[in-house]
Length: 430
Ligand code: GDP
Ligand code: IMO
Ligand code: MG
Image (cartoon, protein in one colour):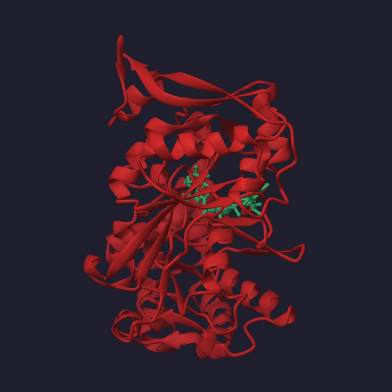
């Protein structure tokens, strides 16, 4: 069972990209299995920054194969740009390093236009989407109108499907949102350019490929996008994304059985951030929140939006551990907490006059939940050069151990900076 899922345990941007890059040195494959270009995964190696939206975060390791499986909504313009940028930087020199599933959903410019037009019209009820067309693309999949990656290589199927799909899309664009309708012939011409660029990466059956690799005992990382609390079914609905972001989705999106998974690593920031609308019980609108945002450089890797910041929420994390089956944790960005006199951890909520440690199941209750905190002493030292737990000040060490014991889950990795080398391994990966 050499499969390992890397999952965001909060509202995304926990540092999944960094962890996947670090883990990739020991992995044969990295699979992106859900979401799309709403993801922004940042990798920093020797001071050089790479932001990936669709290409799996193993790509910096030339011997690690990268797979985009069926569950992803593939924005063909974005991925072509991303591939070009990688190649210019000397990466992805062998096209066999990247495989794109023939059955992945294609995301086209009208999905983006619809997403943005809807958000604009929503005025006070905005979800705060990334505007990348994720909702409309998954809607097409669910309503069985999606264009699949393999369809791009079959002109008559592509035309037929586009005509059908645009019938409805153009009605909405024109009559509901006052936008210009999409011309099929123009669109087909545009698509042809991207199709040509993407031809070398085409893979008819990624599920079988992954299955074969698992059988051969290859080490496979399943790279989650977004985070647990943005899950379509189990997140803070309706302020969620349009895919399932929890660990079970790795099996669904890539077409493998749950018995192939050895470990589920929950990626957790030492505090909490959220981009977009929706409840956030431990949110801070004060100096400490500003400290987190400024020191942690909390601006979206996809949209550049300012991320909302707040204390670590152990109630939410326990929920994430439960619904993902998280076996191990990677604790990220503890360096950002340096300089805070005291650090708070939310250990329970007060809800409807009662104290609870169970994450509320309805968005209404979550919005009413008041966090109850445990406070510990902070530290002032710069810890970004720490190589082992012993290098950390006593206060930081006890914070790590308190988080692990409160959550009852081992912390295998502690991250003290964005760089690949700023990683403390508490336990080996495999
Ligand atoms: P992802 O979406 O989960 O991959 O996370 P993002 O890349 O969107 O956001 C995480 C941000 O934190 C990126 O800018 C990373 O470079 C940065 N980062 C990751 N780990 C650490 C860390 O331990 N300390 C600091 N200071 N920054 C980190
Ligand atoms: P990574 O993989 C943080 C949020 C958006 C919005 C909601 C719905 O980098 O962690 P969507 O465009 O998906 O329809 O937006 O989900 N969101 C993310 N927030 N990190 C992400 O990805 C996100 N992807 C979507 O801000 O609140
Ligand atoms: Mg991100």
